Image (cartoon, rainbow, N blue to C red; front, side, top):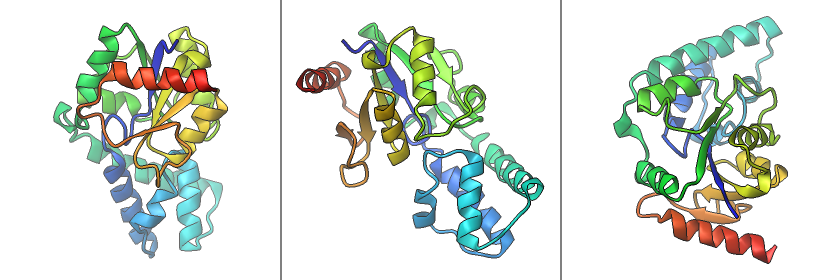
Length: 222
């Protein structure tokens, strides 16, 4: 029986992807090359340093480890400036209602994100103390598709992976959920997240009870 719902943060609870893209794009412009939305797809669900490596690869730029750290810090400083404008109104449609539904069903809920800025984002959204567990880049060392973030979240909820379902909007996150032994609900189309066990377009109008029944049926089929 599913007892825990584990949510990625960016692109699932709130759309901070546009801020990541803007900050990376500004950095690319400073370095003298274009960074497109298509390029940005490669950065979803991976760590900051891995994202920087991809950015530099796109630009054909080589840098020392010290220079990479400085560039990553510059990007993060700009990103933090942008997310400081977030308010509870920036929660994605239907998210808050869905979280309350999960609460009423006595499900444990957790945030599992590679972002080290998770505490600041949750604070801006008014959700600092809402979740039963918060696992972010400050607690883990391996980025998705490694399942560490989801396995750690399950442990902090006091659950085994088979009792948890993961909500993810990135290919790497879906893979991480599966590697961790969890059902993955893709927040996005089947075309974009083909390996998700179930796909939803948004949380708006979504009934938590019905969705978890679908998940349970998937488990029984397996």
